[in-house]
Length: 317
Image (cartoon, rainbow, N blue to C red; front, side, top):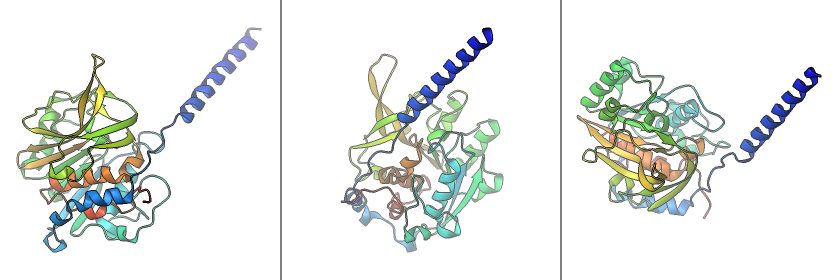
């Protein structure tokens, strides 16, 4: 009798779990509709005359920092991003990936094999070694960063000599708590809230060269973080774009999702979106991040504009 009751109880739990899993799957996030090619081309054309020539591009060593994948399907796929953006930036000599898009079937584009002129890519996992810090002009991190005293010092020395640092999504979320020490290095010390779903990005500094030509609003399906903790030093941190998020008072306020920050001779570009793989294929996201990378490296911000459309998610006109 008791045995049968226990079986029925476990069956009931199993049914509830199946129902819960089914509900989660049925409400799984789907990528947003991509922008039209012609709209993206207009944004790129707004800065076309300001692009540097290939002959003017100095040699640039970019370190792509990733770690093991730590989320579900199409989320936080750091190794896939590393391999595919190594191809996007460095071409065939940097990666054996067949395409540069992260989501869906491979998008054929022969031009992606070329990479960007003058760029050498180094891929590393967990944390750059001393030789990688020494070689790098720019470090781009997409993974959680395990900060400690020695790492603060390494990043401080790197920025102090004029290096550039880009932190994407998980790299902006400081564990276990937001840190004022991290804020001194990268402008933001971490966040306390997050959500998944529709994100309307409001470009608040359309006059900034990184944002040149972008529409006032861009819509994605991703994961914003907020609020920056400790509060931003508005004299030193420039918030380029943000999203309206709910605060403790239930009122909404514009929360920074992209920012720039100067530290010593170095520069830092911060990007909160990037939870889902499809966000990396969005051309407007690429415009912001690739221009932020060039800016952080002390380069013309449009140096990588030519890469934006390669294997990108685009709708036909």
